[in-house]
Image (tube, rainbow, N blue to C red; front, side):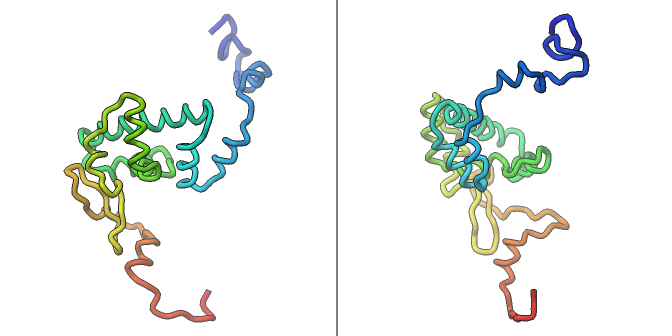
Length: 178
């Protein structure tokens, strides 16, 4: 920082991002990025995996390197991948944890991207034949660190509506019910 207070010698108490100079240095708005950001989450990940130009290259490299790190470290630091996803979703308000994100990107994208970036294919990815999560009809299953699938543990006191609909189908309907 320079001689004044604040960031980069700006005025004391003035947010540097709000200064005219900072506004001039911001990258131009991108209609394509705005379109992608407005998509539902699964479509957003598909669109990012196909996005052209520098923003697409940056996003793909970030997602691939982050995914690789998570795949490498999870067996060392977590009991299961559900814990990692829930930790990121609950602790950082992510819409989807890293393993749910990787399922949206797909194993083929991850494997080819790892190869293109000179990264090995982590053992946990090799074990994920049908993705990290899958449905068994009544329950959602997740890939365990040993390569088998187990039921996603329920959170005490919570209700997962999609699972409840599968477990307990509607027995009767009424036109008067709302």
